[in-house]
Image (cartoon, rainbow, N blue to C red):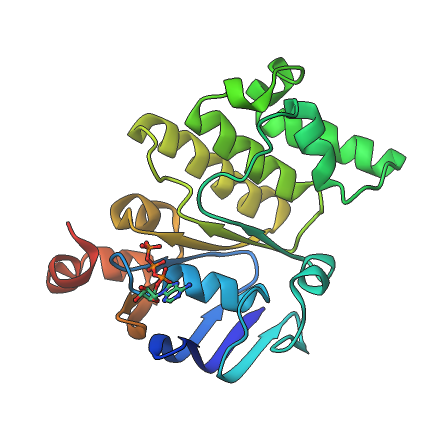
Length: 234
Ligand code: ATP
């Protein structure tokens, strides 16, 4: 479904990604792991059209998307949920959600809104609350829910566990897993929290200083003690 072939991305003299090959299959969770500065965020920004790669090819859903704009990527079925929440704190939960329907307001969008709120009941309970009153976990749920309203084929999730209590992380990851199982969604999950990510992922990719150092079934990576010590921090 998503395939990177020899992708290199630089910021001036800094090479953030070097010759990255990666495959993320449909209906699966692919976790991208690695320490601070390994290139995880740059990888997502490069895929979603926010950062132009210096070389290499990116294909999504059968099409070459290497030079597409971020807008075109969203319409094409890729939803990027950036690190750091990204809710509009002066708006209510419901208003934030409506932004995710890309300005449309059809019957189908209303049904989709109901489906999404079913997945995250807390957002239904708090629909009239201003987003700045939400907890960190609730904000993360809101941005994921909002991205689902555009009915993406693939979610690109950047560090959804950041700053959240383990119990909340487990709750959010369980919902992501459910979306994959029940709706066939594909997910590229970027995480520093390798242990939690590997527990829900099908496949894992480990980045070290911008290069892919391992790519295998999540269970195989989780069982590799040397790799865990060297790159995954547990
Ligand atoms: P983190 O978990 O801290 O976000 P990361 O794995 O997502 O780390 P990136 O943010 O992709 O890593 O950064 C990869 C490399 O690119 C790092 O060396 C970083 O300093 C550099 N970098 C990232 N953004 C920029 C930028 N806007 N300008 C210059 N260098 C950058």
